[in-house]
Length: 268
Length: 328
Image (cartoon, rainbow over the protein chains, first blue to last red):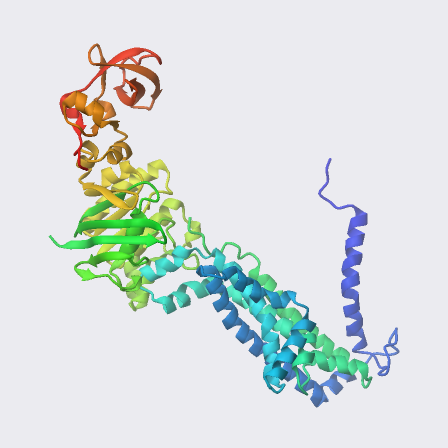
């Protein structure tokens, strides 16, 4: 008899692989409670909650967190608008250079971040744009647009063209058609794309190092903290927050796009 | 009688493709008008020109006397039943039907009532809360019909609406559509490639070929008096005689059409060879070769069917041979 059950060896190997990926995360969490503040010592000599209080009181943490949240929110908003428009243009109409544009939109995510970062920095310098909050946002928007675009374009392809014509035929103008037909059919794709974009922006380091001035986003702040040890477990507390803040949207995106394969374009 | 739709020299070219090429049509108010033709003959493009999804390259279109030039689809008092039905998948059946009224700004209670009535009209009462994906093909077709009719359009356009249905359902819907059209008195413009459908439903039929209308007329005219060989061949698979043969038979030099059921096999007439036969239910179809001209004869039930290769004699009543206009 052929069995659907995997052999024990394969199960153990799969378990070990997953453990290898996720156990270090637990280590980070544990160090957030250690009493030792200079070096990471295993096992922790004692456990304490005081680092949560210390972190709460640190103004630099709040500043970095606030900057990261604002950058992620605005980059995501820009990406949602531009990514949707671009996806609509590429999937709904035929024009010269359509394939090229599609490729150029996707390219930034394939490009190493360091190249995006260097080229943006060079471009900002050349144009005499001082580094600021907005240069970080621009840098992040380059790859956030891709995520939204990819999600939206896949959904647009599944909306049959006659749905839009049906709406026009029933008296709705272009704006009403977008509002009542297109948006409801791409909403979950946009939400998923937006959440992924937010998470990407929130933990981005490389592009940010090149496009930020004096400001520190949360990941950059963490990097600096690791270099000069002072109240080290504070970094671990922040790391826990980052994991939660980025993990929840990704989980949400996963559940939103799951099981929506049959949303649009079911004409027949 | 008011003209509902008028095409004057209308063309629609896509690059070098002449999808519609110099078409003139006049569709009267309250008429059930069919556009019949093979795929790619321009009939669907004509429908899309009326709906406003396409703009003519040349010529003029008027809907109830008003020029349609530059009028977008959402400002035309015309509604369409799409070939793939195009029901909105995210809306319930009732919201699909009420969509046009919602856009027009009707209050919710009022448009729900109108939508319910429309669903009753297409024999789907109580289906309002379902999603389109929960309906069968025939039910979706009815919802699409209700969604268009609830807006009381001046002209209803139907793009191969029965194409996706099975034979039995198709025949039932043909009768229902015809009855509905008579009851409502709305002008129906119906696109189909099925000649049986066009002939049985329409008041008048326009036969399309290669972007042009080759004949317009009542179903009987189209069927019994084809003006060009294409119509004879496409509409009823008539036997088409070349001008040489027609001249020998009648003295007139033109194509001629002879319906298969008018062909008799007997002791007199022209010699022909039997190529084969096939049983098609109500009759038997016999393929013949008359001096190199292929011919089809329909033998009624019970008539003796000749073997393939047999020599037979074929004849027909003179009035059954329809000689076409030599200039057409």
